[in-house]
Every structure is written in C-alpha cells, then in structure tokens.
Length: 314
Image 1 (cartoon, helix red, strand yellow):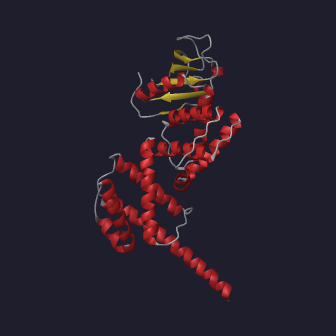
Image 2 (cartoon, helix red, strand yellow; image 1 turned 180 degrees about the vertical axis):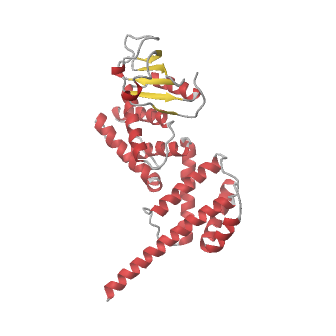
Image 3 (cartoon, helix red, strand yellow; image 1 turned 60 degrees about the vertical axis):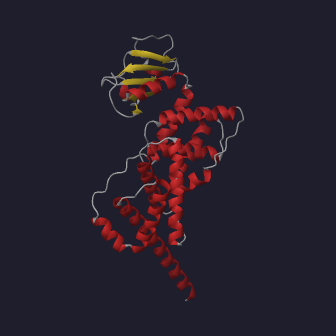
C-alpha cells in the first residue's frame, strides 16, 4: 500500500538495492517494472529489456537495473506509472542525468515532480528537433536575467543533451529547461511561473527606479533579493503567506532605513493595486533589509571607484 508523501525520490544505486528489490509486482513496459520495496513503498525499476519475457512474480534481473525510483504518494505513483509506459527509456534516463546534475549544483531544493515535467518536455523537444520544428521563447531574456543560476543549469543541460543525443538546441531551449528548474523550486506550474516572473520584473523595476542607482545584477545581494521576490510571490499567489508575528522588528527597521522604507511602501502600493493584496509587516521588514543591502552595495562600490579615481589624479 503506497503511503502519503508528496513526491517521489531517486532510488538508491544498484549496489544499494540488490537486497531490497526482488519480485516483480507489475510490468509497465519492456523497460520498466514495479516492485515492492521492504519499506512498503512501490519501486519503479528501469533498465533496457528488464521486463523481456518476464511476468509478475518473477525475480528482477538485477544486471539490467539502470535506475530505481521510489514513489511515496499514491497520486504521483499512478501518474508516473502511466507516464512511463509510453515514454522512451532513453528520454527518461537523459532527464534523470540532467536532474542529477542540477541537484548536485543547485543551491535550492528541487521538487521531485520535475522527473515527470522535465522528461515530458525533453521528449517533446527531441521530437520537434528531429522534425526540424523551431519554437521560440519570448521570456528568454527575462528568465536569463532573473534566474541566472538556473539558466546556467539549463546551459549545462544542453551540453548533456548534445553529448547523449548529438542534437544542438538554441538559447530558447535553455530558457524552457530553466523554467522547469524554477517551477520545481517554487512548487508551481508554468502559468503560475509566468505570473511570478512578471511580478519579479515589475517589483525589481520599482526598486531600480526608486533607488535611481545602477544595480549590479551579478551581485549576491541582487540575486538574493530576486530569489526572495520569487518565493514571496509564490506564497501570496498560492495563499501560503504566513501571518505577521510581531511589529517590533518592523518598527525598528523602518526607522533605521527610511529610504528602504519609502521604497517598500511603493512596492506595497503596487501589490495592493495590482493584486488586491496587503503586504504584512513581516514581509515589509524582509524587503526593507534587502533594499537597504542593495544601497550599501552601491555605496561601497561608489566609494571604491572614487578612491581609485583619486589615486589616478595623484
């Protein structure tokens, strides 16, 4: 009986599962079977030809095991089993390789639903390139600007795809793959991601305009601010924003950082008008801290430039 959890996770490597995977419970296709794990969770075991001339109740040929997935949510279990039946094993393994690389290098946690969404996308992308069909992404520039870490993972993904398949994709495909990484981080779908991206664009624009200073978009402070905006948008757009705890910190921060306070009030006015949502004092506090940090970064770099110019005039 599959028990409750909200994701499925990568199975253990073959060396770790020899004693845990034994009997076939169900055959999905020639390359995938379902087995019962010792912890009560079903395991989807994949490998080329692993189900060839096999039937339920037979022992798994461990020499053919390439990947194992452990599903702990009944709905996801059913979705993935249906999904995998008509999906080429090569596309699933390619997607798994890309996701494994991303999980190793991404600083944020990826929801395991990406095993379904990214695999489905890659299957379609490979089919399109074989038929010489080109799809453009109007959000490429914005995605590259606001999600540089995930965009780099998208570039890495294209290198993996080229190595495994020989196909070369355009920069627009990097953006499509990046979208899957970001939606897996935020736990949202593509429509919600588009709304979040628009929110991040508009709010970051308010900050740039209010501060009236050049923003170093490669700085750690800016990237942290954008990450915060993304998760804040995800929370209030999905009704998961937490209630305020106390106003003490808000009062002290607003008095300490008056310019950041004014900037955040402009953000709050935009959010209230556009989304009919009132930003709480806790969230305003976090935003003020981020905006103030951006000001500090700019002032520090301005001071460095002034010092360097002074040295040259001596």
